[in-house]
Length: 499
Ligand SMILES: Cc1cc2nc3c(=O)[nH]c(=O)nc-3n(C[C@H](O)[C@H](O)[C@H](O)COP(=O)(O)OP(=O)(O)OC[C@H]3O[C@@H](n4cnc5c(N)ncnc54)[C@H](O)[C@@H]3O)c2cc1C
Image 1 (tube, rainbow, N blue to C red):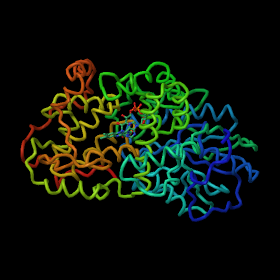
Image 2: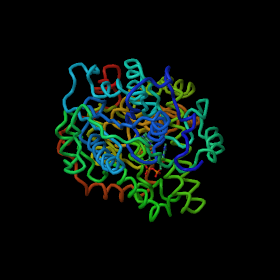
Image 3: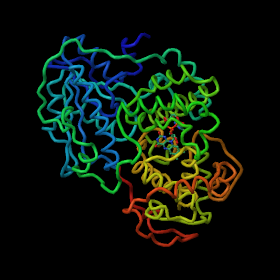
Image 4: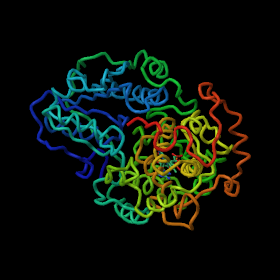
């Protein structure tokens, strides 16, 4: 498929209405794919605008009341917005970004919201398809409120989610199907340029100006979001930062990817691209093609297994199972095992607050959690240990799932993603097989924090972590650790994370 050729049907998730209505333009409403290039949803919107002889208008809004909204997430998004604003301006494509600083009274949509005003004049609305977080609900809500069709386009996978028609319970089965489909879908995405260009007046003033930009952290600080979760000190958002990150990975990191990716002492061996993939700053096609161009076969194979197989298995899971935020999505055998062992004594029970502050009996776990809090990232192997320990220290599997969701999605830049929910469910046995029986876990795979020393040099990792700053807001002392019984904030009375 040559670059910029028509977007295939499998990427297109049409709603109940598909026929364009009389209108002034085609509107592309950006929800999750925050890039102005190599974007199938944007290309589809431009193709339809060209067919209809209409201009293309791009809109993005940012509210302060989405779940886990914080300085960290807002800053990353605002950095992404600044890159897009500059590129759309260069290409003469009108792009309006509306920043809503204050929370709405009851969180309800306003009939005069900029999105509804713009969508009300559109012939067709194109948006991003994303199978989790607030996106499906937002898309549904707009469909209910306007006459024009709202078409969602899958720009987040290489093999479109709708191409694989069933939920795969294992990576093995998914791998066979996804790898076989790869030649059909692994091509440069390219860019479709709109033919009709007009100056356009948005019904609001854009908060981002390409001529006189306000730094993203200052803009985020002016919004009614959680200011205790600070911008990541080392990870900047946007398509330019994503391109720099990919270039660094190709140049130096990729060479030892297969050997070192599991070792937290080698953060330079991995791509660090997950936040950029989550926010849509870079296309997975571009990443895989560029890696394929330069990697040795063994490195490529391992990388493809993560980016194509494990990442898209997670999308397959969330796309096919709307219960993915709940225990109901865990495999039956694992649910039964965890249930059968629900009354086993736990080595310790920690409250959500104790866990959040990294105040458990394990120095390794505490340092990993503090890395999340400080940087918004944690190496993959530590994430596995981190999650298994949460299961070990929780009153039941449901509490463990809610705790992982709350801590991961609040702090991690790549959280709130299909990969997040696949990761939490992997901890609870999904995509895995039964192992030998253990207390608390039953036959669900157990991983030991104390045995981690056999896998990597734990003292070296702890030494490198201890040189880093701990946020002052999170250094207040936590309640004492209680072993064997239900602790504050655990079990049935646990605080419910935001929906
Ligand atoms: C409990 C738990 C929670 C997790 N939460 C998230 C999350 O919120 N967001 C997230 O993106 N990933 C999550 N993962 C998966 C994995 O840890 C990260 O994708 C990976 O560490 C990201 O680092 P990287 O970009 O350097 O990966 P690389 O090793 O460079 O891999 C390239 C890309 O492949 C994908 N990938 C790599 N490993 C995995 C994996 N195990 N599963 C699925 N996709 C993978 C990612 O998109 C990643 O960016 C979680 C894993 C666990 C065990």
